[in-house]
Length: 181
Length: 173
Picture 1 (cartoon, rainbow over the protein chains, first blue to last red):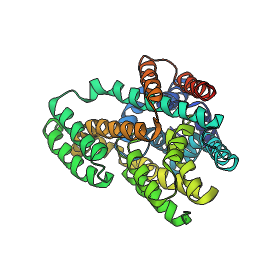
Picture 2: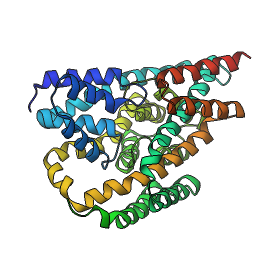
Picture 3: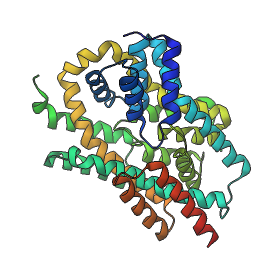
Picture 4: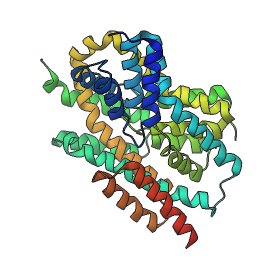
């Protein structure tokens, strides 16, 4: 299906405006699949799964990929710009305020940020915990996750080294069962 | 210490290329490199991440804050471009390669392998975030309560706003 570029950009811009709190994928689904019918459920699920093996946030990758399917390379670029522009603009404004107004230790802004940072730790932890039952469904999955945590979280090895060790190991562990249809 | 624009772009391009496993998996690496470069202090790193929770879109947009600190407004855009470019190029290229990718044996094995790897990376991210963000016992408790609430399905924005309110309260007391 092909969609005019202007319409495409506006649709993804709308997603970018409302995708708060890590709910981006659901917002894309609602805007593109449910309300506009530009893609069906199956296509969306397959697309999301494939975007997980690319580097970067799945949400941004998903937008770029769907945009490109609906409007070619230009569509992909516009969709990505659409989902990033509102958040990026606000982030620049907040960052400029932070550095120029000077958030001093002990000021009210610093206190509020400390509270937000604590809640944000909770957000990342809760998101990971939700995935645990489905993700760590076998002994090898648990061991692989543990190994990555020890190398990266505890020993502070570089991410490149950790991935170079863990990804081939993971491919080997999952090679057999990934065969066939 | 300020960085030059190409330096900032290349630093974040490297993060962008390596950010497998979803979410903020490259955050521990980012904190290590950015602090070592002297582009940010620990407190600023934590504050930038906290500010990122207020904006719609991926919370990876916190890189704008880090780039701004390293090299001004130009640095902010250089950081964003570096972070999002690799994934976007791959995602657009996938339009022509997805049928092949879906059938390819290695791609299915990779998808499965990245799930536990992603959990290990996320656990590392939580640890590093806790180290840079949670300055005292109070905040450990708040983080614990926030985890519970979000896990139980309470609106994320409400919990984040609650954290801000609590921070203000603690400041007053």
